Length: 97
Image (cartoon, rainbow, N blue to C red; front, top):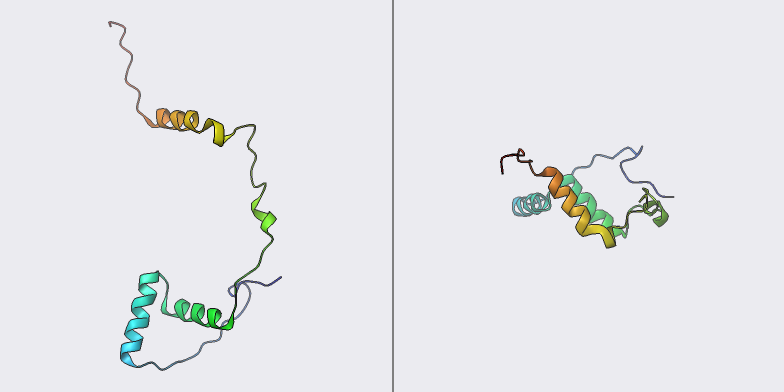
C-alpha cells in the first residue's frame, strides 16, 4: 500500500528559478487555491508524473457508526424538528392564561 508523501518520508529541498511574472502568477494561483507555493508545485509535479495519490480500501468508510435503528431517510423531518426545538429558548409557562 502506498503512503502519503508526508508520513515518515523526508522531503528534499530544491531551488527553482522563475521569471518575475511567472513567479507572481504561480503565487497568485496558489493563494487562490488556498495552498502554499510549495504545495502548488508538488501538486503540479504529482499530476505530471501521473501520481493519483494514496489508494485506500473503500470499505474503510462503511460501518463507521451505529444507527441504533434510526433512519435519516424516513425520520429526517422529525429529527430536524427536535434539533430546532432543542436550540430554541423556551418561554416561561404562565398559568394565568
